[in-house]
Image 1 (cartoon, rainbow, N blue to C red):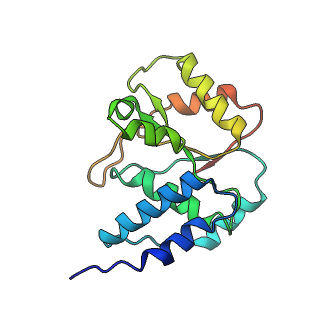
Image 2 (cartoon, rainbow, N blue to C red):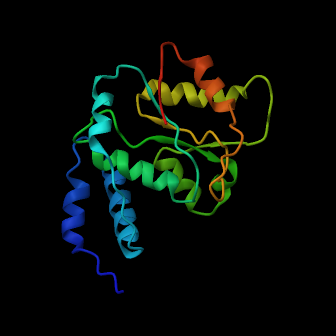
Length: 182
């Protein structure tokens, strides 16, 4: 089957009309939206389940499972496009593997969109002070934080052992409660 994306003007209007979104996020959303359409990838969101988020006063920590390389893209795009309905759902800061920072060009783009990079596998009792400082900065900015608790992609239907270093960093720096959303 041949996939024919919608006219670019329709997508541009949809992406650039999100209230309060910076232009660079709108441009990234447009590029990602067009790419997802070419892959014929569709996402269904139960918007009624997000209504409870409108009454939150605590910082939002999104904790999805990590099944593919597109997970963080799909969560970010969902938050971006649902923002007019649920203002708390801004594009999240993503805790990404430090290896992504070294990829030419992509590391800069991810940083501009709100990613911060984490060295995996420390396993220390206390989270890295640099990680705690970064989590503190993210929570102070008020944007959601996206954390993959499994730490890496889990192939198949099995769940991996949870990594708790980032959550411990959130606990250590949070000056009030945080809302964990699976």
